[in-house]
Image 1 (tube, rainbow, N blue to C red):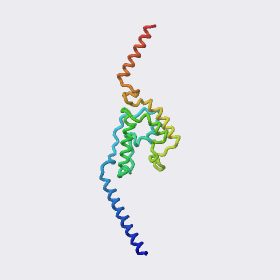
Image 2: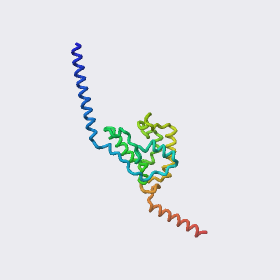
Image 3: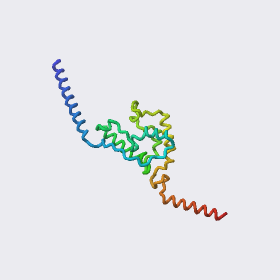
Image 4: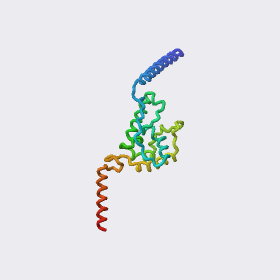
Amino acid sequence: MRRLFAGIWRNKLRILGALFAVALVLLLLIQLVPYGRDHDNPPVRLEPTWDSQRTRELAVRACFDCHSSEVEWPWYSNVAPLSWYVQSHVDEGRRELNFSEWDLEQDEADEAVETIRDGSMPPWYYSLPGTGREFSDSELDELAHGLEATLPASGYPQEGGEDGDGHGDEEDEDHDEDEEEDEDEEDDDD
């Protein structure tokens, strides 16, 4: 009976060893896939006009590693398959909101404060204890208030215009001319 169990365990150990070897070979092979290790940080074009240096400091800690051109790439961002996830996450983050390209339209800028307040940003795994990116509730509240004050004041480009008010420059010029005409009419009345 013991010999039977010993034989079964030996077979299971061989199978586990073979599976481990195959997994190790696959892990080494996927390192050859080039995606996820091209860690570029394009030049910073324009940042928002921050309401305070403290808001910028909090945004750098909480947001810039996915939503800017100033990403600090962690060591595991060079090891597939984690590198694939990190690269994908940063690409998506930059596409939706990029604090380093404030001269371009920012699709998700108006939702930044809400995502901080509802706890979906920064993601839970980003600020795990020991990462140096832990945030207290008061810091997140301070960041939300700071972004609330910063984003409208920065006049981030929105759909339909480039000057932050949702209007193109031509429409603003027409509006300014209308105001001037109204003022001239009032002066004529006096």
